[in-house]
Image 1 (spheres, rainbow, N blue to C red):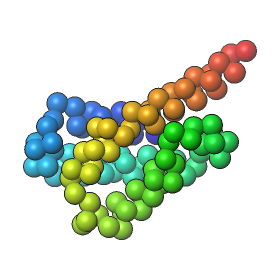
Image 2: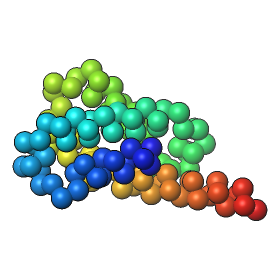
Image 3: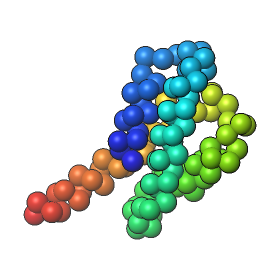
Length: 107
């Protein structure tokens, strides 16, 4: 998930919404990244999800289906909002969980 989040961020870095809307390749890359994040979220343990209720896990999982099956109805500005505004919290949760796992294994 972290790798996909970083790749989505790198694709949108330095772009404006207008530039993103005009760049079909960037949109495709962001779409794929969000699909990967969505699918990966489905494989996280329920205990982890229960610890982080600030993440709308059902929405994270569902957006992948929307992108795969309703792609013609997903506007670039929606992809932009997800990429630029909604991945930060998920990124933070993933990093905290990995750090906790590492700390536990170091003990």
